[in-house]
Image 1: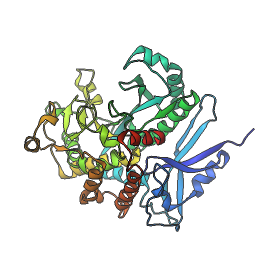
Image 2: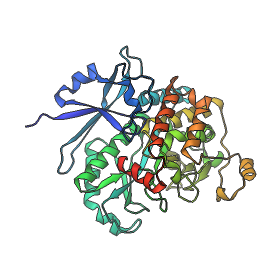
Image 3: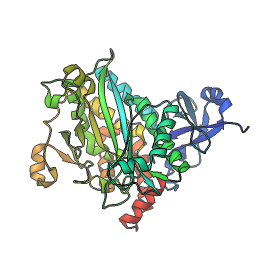
Image 4: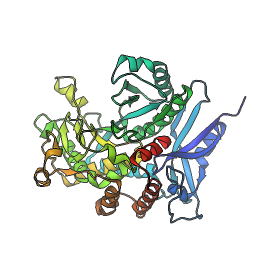
Amino acid sequence: MPEPLVMACLSDVAGQVRGKGFALADLDKRCRSGVGWTPTNVQITCFDGIAPSPYGSEGDLILWPDSDALFQAEIPGAPTLRMILGDVADRTGVPWTCCLRSHLRSAIERLEAASGLEARVAFEHEFTLIGLEAGSAFSLLGFHAVQGFSEALISSLQQAGMEPDSFLREYGPSQFEVTLAPKPALRAADEAIALREITRAVARSFGYRASFAPILDANSVGNGVHVHLSLWRKDGQPAMYAPDGVAGLSREASAAAAGILRHMPDFAAFTAPTAVSFIRLQPHRWSAAFANLAIQDREAGLRICPVNTTDPDRIAQQYHYEYRAADSAASPWLVLSCLLHAAASGLEEKLVCPNPSSGDLSVLSESELAATGISPLPRTPQAALERLGSSAVVSGWFPEGFIPIYIDHKLHEFAASQGQSPEEAMQSYATVY
């Protein structure tokens, strides 16, 4: 019998999962001793170029596998997928400047310190199955066309310790959606990373290619990641709902939403990070183009989701909002870091969120939009990077030096698609995500 292997992994600033493999029998030892890692790996782009790096060829780090983040899934007709996520530190144990999982840990700690609350999160993933004609949107025909794949996928996710919530044939050509049950923030982000890899592996076993790229066709919709977020007290009671609050939000949920809305344009380069991401984030694409709060509006930047009950206690259990300006080219660790830091800032400052918007914001003039207090999201990746680089607040959320490294990484990545048509650029990203 061949020796079973497992890969110690991280999700990097390119939204790629990279790492090193070793014998499964050595897992306990590796969790105690770590796995060697190289600093300049942070500058490997999604196209496998290397952006300018402050580290050069020097330095050594340690990737510490986390036994709580081991995922094992049987893949039909293929080897078992085994991956274990972890944190990266220097050789003295100090979290590395570019360790995104450590960034998320810091954001979780800040939210708890600011409010005493815990975030529960569910990631809703859209993806396209290439090599398949899947019937029309939301159709039984489209659902049944991939029933073998979808049942194998759900089984694999369950084997890996996840709780799939739903699977559906989405609106776009051969587009599907899979959602997991809410979990504490770190676990939710870890599961989002593993879900993408398991989905790709199961798709390969059926002769398809699963692409989570932000958009494959400018004349259609794109693939988003909707991040469902709720706040809970330490005693397990929900902290989101207040019938007399703005949009039904509690004081804490209102303050957290206000922080997210205030900083959403500043961190859009983290959550929508490719050269084609902002083709999707435009009005009338059922994505998000503005930093606005709205009730059950699928073009809101922050959407209050519906509940299926009139009982106040059950409403409180279900009440939450979703962030809609993210895609799967972004690391879930980094996306959630931004949301929790922004929420914590709103709680610390005791902000009050604005009244929810309604209607088509794109028909408003600049002055009319400014009067509402709603900011548009950046319209290009370059504008998003400029906004990120000029935000002292967002810079303060991360270790010194991280944002310049990220910007250099992205500029080098964007250069790879210079001279390409939008269609060519979208296809380039479709091959790597």
